[in-house]
Length: 267
Image 1 (cartoon, helix red, strand yellow):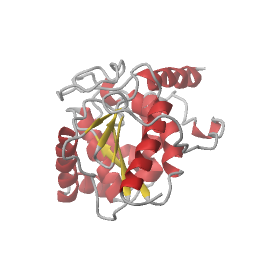
Image 2 (tube, helix red, strand yellow):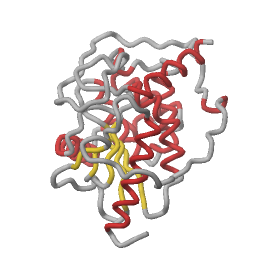
Image 3 (cartoon, helix red, strand yellow):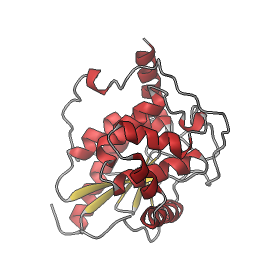
Image 4 (cartoon, helix red, strand yellow):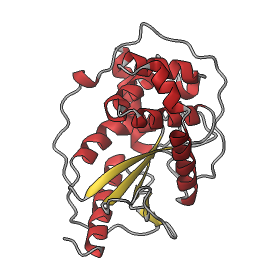
């Protein structure tokens, strides 16, 4: 019953809210941009050993994802904001890029992931998704570091959903509700087959430090004030109707991807 209640609460959060810097991640604010400021929480972390395991295997299979692009074109100022001089986060391969600004501590991100992941996996071959972890202070920064360390070790994809579950379903890690620390975060990856010493070395490496600096600069340049935020090719920061849904934002993203493809001479 506890798992069902947790999933239902996350679904409600996903529909109409986002996590913002300076707010309590357990009670995210409305999905509108805000100036970045450190999040605050010094509550000691505890491990809930009685929490249920990940429920991913118990959920019904996701319905087929449609990338329908018919209907009204997205409207600047309503569906998206045009980013002045916006650039993709990683533009090396020439693909159209969808950037998802997220953080593991954000419950709205956790609730969005079951919608976003199948959508991302079903995108055409000329599109790729880049996860950009938000650095809004305190535990946000530790979990951003964790994501890039996992990416450096090649385990980010297989641990991505599990980390959300660990914080928001099992509550074995507290995220923004506590102060987990890198030892607790490293132990999570250890439980998923990663050498803990290797993880800690990666987390403090120059490569990860460089990625963190790049992510922070990118988020500021793109005007991101909350998570999750979707950006298409660094140009279009999706906002959507504040009374709408995350599904609506994915539909806006599909149309903006099609617009960018046409601008490049594709179909």
